[in-house]
Image (cartoon, rainbow, N blue to C red):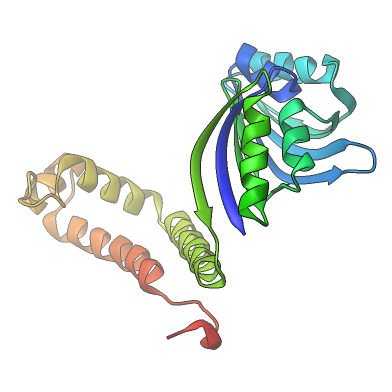
Amino acid sequence: MISLELSVRQGDCPLSAASAAQDVAFVTPHWHYRSDQARLELRMLVAGASRRDLESALETVRAHDATTAFDLLAKQDATARVRLTMGTTAVMGAVVAHDGYLTGPFRNVDGVERWALGFDTEAAVDGALAALERTDDTCELRSRRTITPETALEEVHAVDAGTRLLEARRSLTPTERETVTRAVTAGYYDVPRSMTLGDLADTLEVSDAAVSKTLRRAESKLLSASLADSRPPQWRT
């Protein structure tokens, strides 16, 4: 498998039109391309800088010529969940015509989408890239990698590690999070240190012993998550 990462600015995409005009971001964690109907079905998460930006962006998507179905699933403050069905854009058409497929969620901000694509052969990749150059859209190739079973498993491990770190960060108490953040930004972990433990304690208005204890608790959570090996036994070496 050959993996590509592209930055794409599409003139015929409702999401690009909306994010170029309003301060919003789209993330599409779930999608399905229906080749028999030349339709892309999406579940989108939308976040706006304000409720007004969100409302304007949703209306742009709803009214776009490429939109064939639009369902607002939920909305709260400046965020929303949407189900969208749209026609095939020129870029998607070029990818599909060369047996390419989406391999992960894509993001759209400031009128630009980040795509993760997969192809089965080098010839298919070369054909797709040539076809993309012939479109009127702007496509920037950010990376091109060959994925082997070994590298695929490494990426699974990396995702697992990232998930553990995210969970560990969420488990920090407000005090632990503030203390670690202040320590990092103030240079407590620099080599050499630009802030001592006493200095850090003074800025937080607590004792040296208290800040030391809080840092040890936070460090234990974060380091345990980063060093844990959650791979199944057959993947371990």
